[in-house]
Image (cartoon, rainbow, N blue to C red; front, side, top):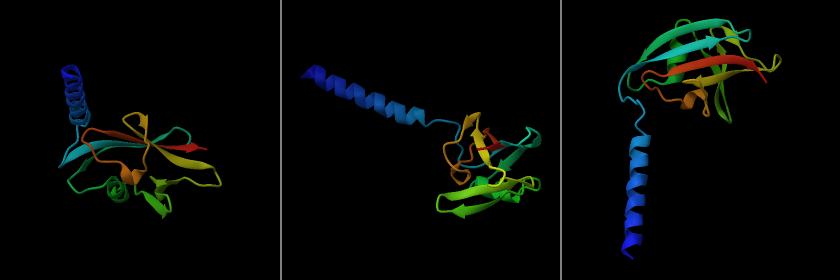
Length: 129
């Protein structure tokens, strides 16, 4: 019985540690800087810039208001999607879309769901489907 109790306590401690330390990525609650890169269909770099953000900012707002990026997009039943970045558009007729990578990994969420985390690198690539 004592061994079973010890195993349960150990499991709880490990689970707690996983949640506490697993979530300790360099998240900020205030301000920071992200690096944004935009690459067109031919692989040409259209932009590579550091963008500062404050608490309450969203990635969508930063991209829409940036003097060079000027992101446009539309909202569908699936959420917000990017139409153009740096005056370069994705289109159904060209069978292209804007792919998003965060720190070198394909983003599993849309642009409106990406949190602003100090030091992150966000890359937008116009690719075919």
